[in-house]
Length: 273
Image (cartoon, rainbow, N blue to C red; front, side, top):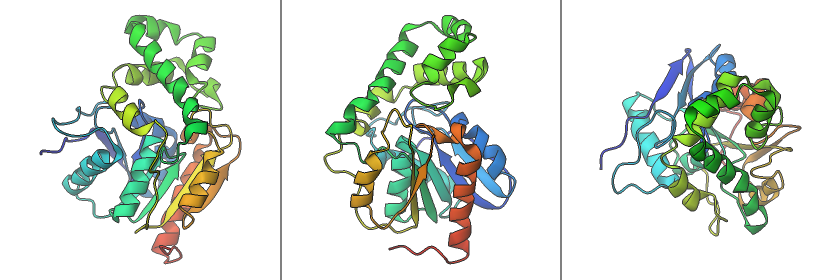
């Protein structure tokens, strides 16, 4: 099977770090953090297969975390990366954890990873389904016009961000358009957003930090307690007041979290449990 060449932005210089978005989103979700990290790191923000500007899944490729990791690892090789650091959000967080389990990265930061969903938290994914339906049903020109209204931006951004008012018409429309054009959404949602009967667990081959926003409206903060039980060897960070996409709500804190994780690895202060 041939692997897709993934759309990505690559800026800065230094130790490389790859940034991975969530389901229905796009690499630009990381833009507030990219600007900060690129001051002292090479930063690669990528669109997963079937999202953003990347091509869809090859024939015969599953829409699960394992396939997304396969595609990313193939692209690491094409980009000349050998065990980069990685940070991911939601679906991207699940991808980051799997990369760490395989030993394909030097470290992983997982923000609200979609790896620990149980029946109690499964309904929280419904806002994502509503966003998908709304994006599909509303014509793009109408979406563009609607996103000029502050209350519309607040409604669209409410599930994702604690501070939706920080987003202007252009960025909100870009998010809505990414959701509208997300070819991999339904198949991925079926595989990755249902309750995880076999949640992520197992030996990690790279240091892992898991962080969660206390105002996450998609994957509630309470899921971090389940993560602690299943992956006790990870480091856990609470993001007070942040939503499901904390890269927008607290970009400075996320950039420092990633920087600190990389610095610990480079200084030999992080050991794999």
